[in-house]
Image: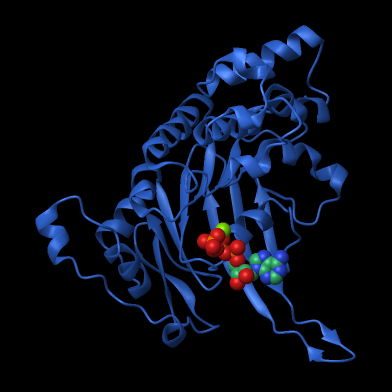
Length: 310
Ligand SMILES: Nc1ncnc2c1ncn2[C@@H]1O[C@H](COP(=O)(O)OP(=O)(O)OP(=O)(O)O)[C@@H](O)[C@H]1O
Ligand SMILES: [Mg+2]
């Protein structure tokens, strides 16, 4: 059934992007000259191993979502390569990309916007099975969807309900059920908890972790909340204006951050201890004055820990 070449146990990363870029604008017009060029993603490289979570952090507009979309080729990259299980899948036709689409899924911030209000949530979760011709007979399809509901902590009796009948956290569970319907190996989670009530966030993060343990999923987890990133991720990449300025194991990023931008981001995290919190002084970082030079490259500063140096 699986058309993707299988990977030997000692193979390289599951997902790998190399010198990925996505530029917007820059088009020449007969009248009005050239639109400004925006390098939303600029020369970004990273790997993600099977079963690993790479956190992607950075200020609003730094290019995190664009990185996720271009990695999945929901938009064509301007340059660079995307490898999946060692196969270069950049620019493949829709047909050739189809098996990879099954293996690589995305979950968005706002579950309500991604759900179809006129479709029962059961139908919504079953849709990818239909699209990929994996639904089987009617009873089998129902069973598959029911088991997906149970996996994400929803009562299968809810299958016939519509999205408006659910809370934000439940809707995100529905989106997650749909994303895992095709047994993917990799999920881009783009701020999947940001829109949720704080009391619900931890439950959804725990669900992501449980599913990772159970299904061996790898995640690119995009988030604003650094304490959640610390809790969830194996490695962290920090983005600034389209570039990765620092990437490394979670502990190294949080304990020994090297880039001044990473330090500024970390200094902004509130501390639960009121005495420490009272004396916390967030560091400022002037982005415009500290833009990474175009020629800057990532240099190793520790085990799997790299920092952008001009
Ligand atoms: N389709 C598009 N056309 C033009 N510019 C775009 C497009 N999509 C994104 N951009 C620009 O690219 C830059 C990166 O946007 P992106 O959405 O990737 O940032 P982000 O890090 O995800 O931000 P946020 O934290 O707010 O979600 C921004 O300046 C944005 O305005
Ligand atoms: Mg975004």
